[in-house]
Structures are given as structure tokens and as C-alpha cells.
Length: 265
Image (cartoon, rainbow, N blue to C red; front, side):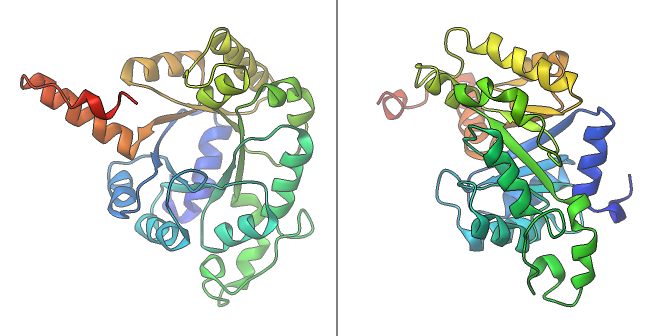
């Protein structure tokens, strides 16, 4: 695919075509991480601003590292808030991930905040997204290229899935096993009792409606399983998580155990 389409449009097209895509969760501030993800040919990155310490300035640096590439830049925002979503998209992100949704109203509001009129109420600003006001015409086509992806990570969202799926202009959903487990009464578990089966049920229902679905893989074997299960967006892991895993495997392979006391809290 031509990068002239724009990374957001490329990812949208891949998902519509039923293709499976790989991405990296970014939680650290160094823009080199995004640059490496682009060079490795990942389909998307997700810059996480819900958790951790990444701020607006660091988001911009990650976006700059991926500019003019075919790697879509998604930002997980803290919450469904109009000003926050507007600012993230004005910085030039290709799309947003919406955490902790519970009902269709929140998803509908997220779409409204992310889209320009007449579909939504996003304001037109002289920022990176419009080349500092020199390309205001981008507002005419941005609605078609901006991705809105809610996270299904609560029991309430599962209960309200039928109405949530009816919200128009949603590009797919991402499942959050750990938060779903916590909301089901099993905090600290990646997939508590019955959660794995429930997430597959949700995924199957979403796919029946033609909606792409994503999830984080815990390792390569789990990633292969997720591909076989039909997930279209596979998170290969987070930057810090992959670093810890790789260093731990190297240390153990060389006969030395990592300092386990650090993790036993």
C-alpha cells in the first residue's frame, strides 16, 4: 500500500480487508522507541497516556518519529473528555483508544469529540494536524482517516455490548483482559476464572458484526493463538515489558537469575 494514503487510512483499509496487524504499546518517553517500531514495519503503535508518565510533549515526539510512515499512531487517552481528545488529535495522532467504557453513550461521545462537523463537534485548530493552519482543508477528509477504537475491559461493557456495537463510525474494539478480570472480581489476574471464555465470546460477537478486534499477546505462543482465534490487532507487548522479558531471558540463559525480589511485592 502507498504511504501517500496516510497511515490512518492504511490501517483502516487493512482492518476492513480482514488483515491481521501487529503493533507495539508505548509507555516510555523516548521517541526512539516509536522510530524503531516504524523501522521494523509495525502496522501501528499505541502511545499510552492513560497510565504512566507520558505527557503531551512526549506524545508529540513519538508522533514526529512516525511521521510520513505507514505505521499508524494511536493514543490511548485517559478518559472520554472533549478537550483531551481534541488536543491529542490536534497533535497529529491517527486515532484514539478509549479506555474503561461502560455503555454506548460513552462510545458515541468519543466519536463526536473525535470527528469534525457535521459528524461530530471537533474544533478546527491551527495545530500539527492542520500543518499549523496552512492545511485547514484536511478537516474535510479527517473524519474518514481518524480511528476511534474503544476498549472492552469491563463486565458492564460486555453486558451492554449489543448497544455499543450499534454506535456508528467505530473502527474496531480492543479487549483488555487484566481490567476485565478486575471488574469480574479477580484483580491482579490476566484472565481470571471464566474471563478467557467471555472475551472470546465478545470477540466472536464483534466479528459477526464485521467489527475488527484487538488484544495484547503475552508471548509469541499466545500471539499465534490470538491469530488463530481471529484477532486482527495483535499487540506484541509493551516497550518496558518486552525489555524486561528479553533481559530476563538473556540473564537466565547465561546462568544468572534476575533479581526476583524486585517483583515480589
